[in-house]
Length: 127
Image (cartoon, rainbow, N blue to C red):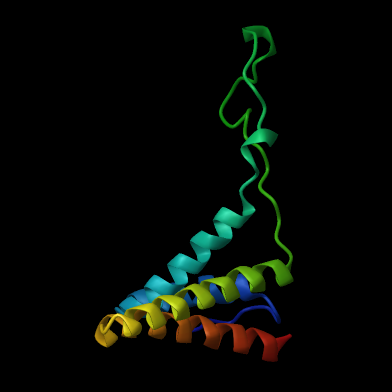
């Protein structure tokens, strides 16, 4: 499932694991990895107040991407924190479902948490 990633590069490990999981048709792993990568993308988003504002035509940025704002770059610690939050959310969801008497429904979020926890552990060992 996991490809080679640079030591401590959790984002690369998430990305590297996605294609093999898709080829293996491992829906749980694909879902966990896609969700974690999307959460990282959201964490990199720049707050809307930092975007350039449109004004008079002569002051407007022209051309493809002229008004784009560079995304934040997350440190490895920030990436790890986002993925740990994803694990915590899945564990909480699994616990809630079990508490509601739906243990079978709680298996998937628990399995996704296990996938992400495994990648976190592997990234810690490589660091």
